Length: 203
Image (cartoon, rainbow, N blue to C red):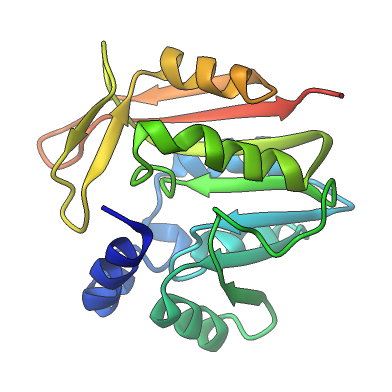
């Protein structure tokens, strides 16, 4: 599934998605704590790539972080601007970020890398690395897998589960060093997920 298909799939259910996930209170408290621990960066800009309705960008801004939200879906960005008028939100793509080399202090990719096919992940991580400052932080949320990377039928668009060790290795190959991860078990209504934080190595 290409980027346009993912954008169109989310645009088609934007109102429902906003109702279900459009505030930070609807996020897992443990995820918020993980984000706060690693991305309470001052000074410097933190990009929330795949920001959706802008709820986590707003959460970071509530911590006095200079957070900027970026998403493929114009409907999400319109909602974010209307709901959080003091924030900064742009339509854009993580495959080609509108940011200078080595200009960003941190990146949040909260369950926004899940639709990237494994064969395309390295290219995306290279782009994230390009804009980060040395020692910049990357925090990603993933759907967790025990033993192998595999696709699954996400409710919106095809997505991928990652074993946390394999994803950490891909980060290492892209020039990052993992500093922490947490795995969250699934339930009757939720798939297992994981959060991982990594720091960009100095050149």
